[in-house]
Length: 168
Image 1: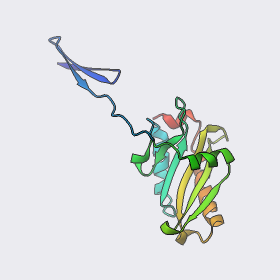
Image 2: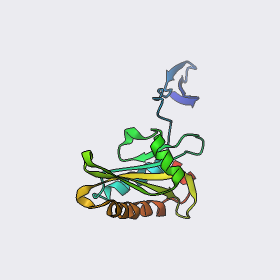
Image 3: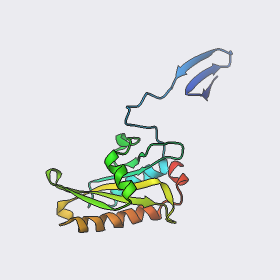
Image 4: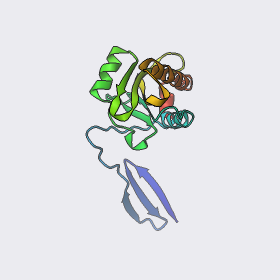
């Protein structure tokens, strides 16, 4: 009979004969522009929201996790981006606390930035959502922002608290 005991990133296999064999399961180092993020509820909420909104082509939820100092992507329709630190440009937008729609001609989209809180309007760690609205779905930045605000508001209603984003 073999039992697994996990501690400090190591898994130790213990047989009934008392022999132990370490099995490394330590996490791989991250690129400098990433932090470790585990926000299961944020990820589920992001994916579900994106699936219900074909009028957007990208959706990401950013916040500063409770035990972190860096703001990063905590939910994304592109899971490989989870943990990527928020750009300096995005953090300047956080400081301004203003919605923004930038027209990106080469991609044919409006790149949106919208501040985000929980359902009661409380801070979730400098939270915001980013999304892209194709020109075919919005003829100007104001229309794109209206689409984004609707989606952001749906997301906010589903966030009971900052801590909930990091729970199963």
